[in-house]
Image (cartoon, rainbow, N blue to C red; front, side):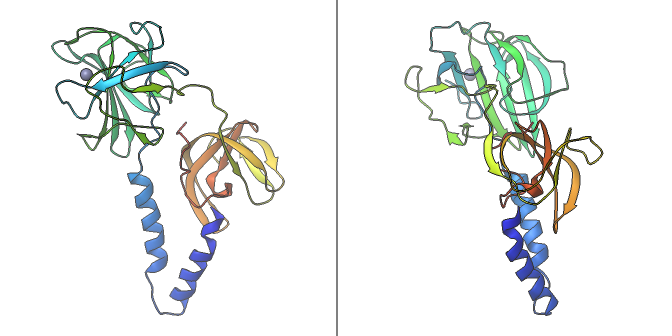
Amino acid sequence: MHRRLPTVFAAALIALLGLLSLPARAETTGATGAAAAAAPVFKAPYPCGQRWTYSHHSAEVRRALDFIRSDGGSTAGTPVLASAAGTATRHSQPSGAGNYIVIDHGGGWKTYYFHLAAYSVANGASVSQGQQIGTTGSTGNSTGAHIHYEQLYNGAGQDIVINGSRLSYPGSYNQAYLTSDNGCGGTGTPFTTWGTDVRVRADARLSAAVVTVLPGPTNVRVLCQKQGDTVNAEGYTNAWWSKLRDQGGFVSNIYIDHPAYKLPGVPEC
Ligand SMILES: [Zn+2]
């Protein structure tokens, strides 16, 4: 976060000189807007290490891709995993999608998982990335077990992006493949903290217990991030917190040495 400081100071200085009163505010608004429009870092909708092949859904439906296993394992009955954290709802359409789950990730983003043999979460459940939400099946209008998968933004189907890369849309299976790293447990993403005597807390709340204190800049691995209490410190305001692998707790993103309020490439908890 602290690499923004010179820009903020410069904007504040200009404002103080009375030359221009808006840049500081525009800086804040711009950062917030960018964060709201950013897509979650979606991961494959099936377990860590499995290799599946995919093809463009034959009748175009919201940029859907159909997935089947191509690593020798059985497609039917394989867990279907949440691509990213969110709120899961159950749906049923016997003549079409069959049993399916929709996950609302916030910010206008949703993912759809069709033809489930069974649901694994309650309607309205809060799910984490990599959590099992169902089992792969062939319910509804389907000729064989597969995962029909969609990513929607504000109700419109988007080209499917996994780990930041857009997938291709081949006309049949066995042309394109994707190996999952969803739910692998994760090594986390390396960052460095800054500041002295930075508190790491049991949760993303200022009232949560302090589990450890970072005396100075520390190399950390961030497993995931989530919104919690808004923190005002070091001239910044930020509600995002990072979960640190080795410290076993959360630290305000203010103390992560990166210019973004919400860290890129780090999934939500
Ligand atoms: Zn399909």
